[in-house]
Image 1 (tube, rainbow, N blue to C red):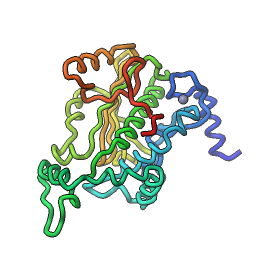
Image 2: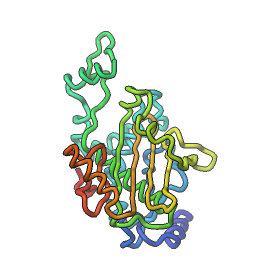
Image 3: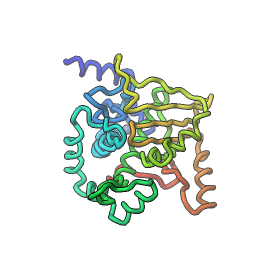
Length: 283
Ligand SMILES: [Zn+2]
């Protein structure tokens, strides 16, 4: 038996139930979240391995690829491709979702409007489309929803020793680097910066990986409420609010819905009662 297999068996002996589907399924695989492909030079952080049943692990493979590609987009420092893996990743995504790259390109009108909003002026001989940021198709949203859901359930399990319950609720808000360009910061993180929490260093051995992924985790004293803030390089950020208390967050979304006719700024990642995002739809 190889060392990796031994390690995996020992991990699963200690963590026998899937952390992602409510505690009903035995774990047979180890899921890395954030996905390993997101990190440069095969250096992914320690402590982000979670017990998973096979359907929960393998069912998100294509979304893992999309999110790894998305997280490596760095318009500021171009640090997303230090290991030269980005093109291979893009090809793999293109094989699975042949339409995605076309959808990422804004139309000329969209590009012009976006550039005007952001104060971007094309240089001589450049078109608006050439200098505009990419659009965010639904596939990106779905992949980030899957990432947010797994990450929140994973760290909840790791920190509390409990599997996130099936009658709990998870809500997500995420934002792309357009906010960084527009405001020089992520307004959502500013809003939450004064709530306490842990922001442990993300590292593998002596290597710090915070330039690719960093996070802050806040729990209520009884650990029934959580807020997870995560930032992926210069590409995007997300916030997940979670509750193990049935119908608590749902009532907030219900109120928003009554008031505005919309779900508010939140995507529902998990809820026994609210219609929610379904990773298995494969969209
Ligand atoms: Zn599962």
